[in-house]
Amino acid sequence: MALLNNFAVEKANFSGADIGLLQSVREIPGFLAFTAVFILLFIREQRFMILSLIILVTGTMITGLFPSLGGLLCTTLLMSTGFHYFETLKQSLSLQWLTKEEAPEVLGKLISVGALASLCSYAGLWLLLEYFKLDYVWAYGITGGVALTVVIIIALSFPVFEAQTVQTKKLVLRKRYWLYYALTFMSGARRQIFTVFAGFLMVEKFHYSAADISLLFLINYSFNWLFAKKIGQLIGKVGERKALIFEYIGLGVVFTGYAFVCSPEWAAALYVVDHLFFALALAIKTYFQKIADPADMASTAGVSFTINHIAAVVIPVTFGMVWLISPSAVFLMGTGMAVVSLLLSLNIPEHPQEGNEVRMFKWTGKNLASDTGGQQ
Image 1 (cartoon, rainbow, N blue to C red):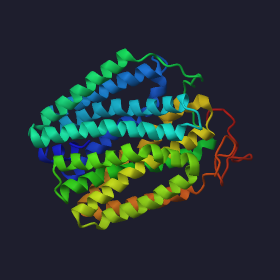
Image 2 (cartoon, rainbow, N blue to C red; image 1 turned 90 degrees about the vertical axis):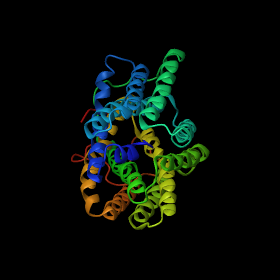
Image 3 (cartoon, one colour; image 1 turned 180 degrees about the horizontal axis):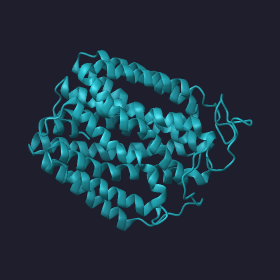
Image 4 (spheres, rainbow, N blue to C red; image 1 turned 45 degrees about the vertical axis):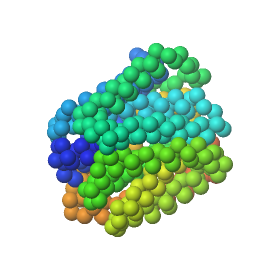
C-alpha cells in the first residue's frame, strides 16, 4: 500500500481516473466477501484464513513484475481476494474467541500488534528504497517473499483452535442488525477517502516520494502501536456510542482540512490523524458483538464486508472522475459522509444488547416485525 500510488504514477503513468479504476477493482473481492460462508462448507475457518494469506502475499510479491494498467489490475485483484477473505475470517474468529468484556481491549491490542509488524515492514521498505536504491520489482518481491515465508511458518506451527458456538453456514440478514449494516456501509465509503484519495493527494499535489510515503506510514503505525490498545480500553469504558460520535466529528474536520490544505506538512498531519481514527472504528465490531446471536458471527462477517464494499466498488471510480475536475470536491463529499455517519451513531444505545439494538426506529410491530432468529 505504501508503494502503490508511486508505482502507479511513476511506472504505469496512472491518472486520477486510472487510480480510481484500480481501487474499484481492488474492492470487488470485498464486495464478494459473503461467498466466504459457502467456502466454509468445505474448509475450516482457520485453514481458510491461512490460504487467504498465501493468496494475499503472492499477489503482493509479483506486483512489481507488471508495471501497466492491465498488470496492476490483475495483481491487485489477486492480492485483494486474499486480503478480503482474510479480513472477513479475522473478524469472525476474533468475535467468536473473545468475550464481550475483553473484546474492545484485545481488538485494540491486535491493531497494536499489527502496527508493530507494519513498523518493521515500512522501516525495511524505507531502507530498500532510500539506502539500497532497489527498484520496485525487488521491493515487492523481497517483502512479499518474506511474508510468504512467515505465513508458511504460522501454518505449520499453530494448532487448530476450536470455537464454542457452531456457526450458521448460510447467509443471514436480520432486520434488527440494520444500524450495524448502515454503519458498516458508511465505514466503507469513508475508508475510500483515506485509502484512495488522501494518499493520492500526497503524491500528485505535494510530490511525496515512495520513501516519504513509507516514512508517513511509519508515523501512522507508531501511533497505532502506542495507542490502539488504549483506544480499545477507552471504548470499553465510554461505550461504542460516544466513541463513534467522537470519531465522526473528528473525521468531518479532517476531510474538510484535506479539501483546503496547501502545506505538505499540514497534509501529512491530517493524514496521521485520519489514520489514528481507524482504531476507533473497532467500536462498530464490538457494538455488533453485543447485539448479535453468537452463531451469526461468520455469516454476518461476510455479509458486512460485502455491505462495506458496495460503496467501495463505486466510490473510487466515480470520485476519480470528480477528482479530474476538483480534488477539493472529493474531500468535501467525504465530509458529508462523516455527517451521515455521525447521525447514525447517535442512534446507538448507551448499553446495546440483544433486544436493545437502537434508540429509535426499532423493528417492532406488524409492519416492522422483530426478527427473532429467522433469515430475512
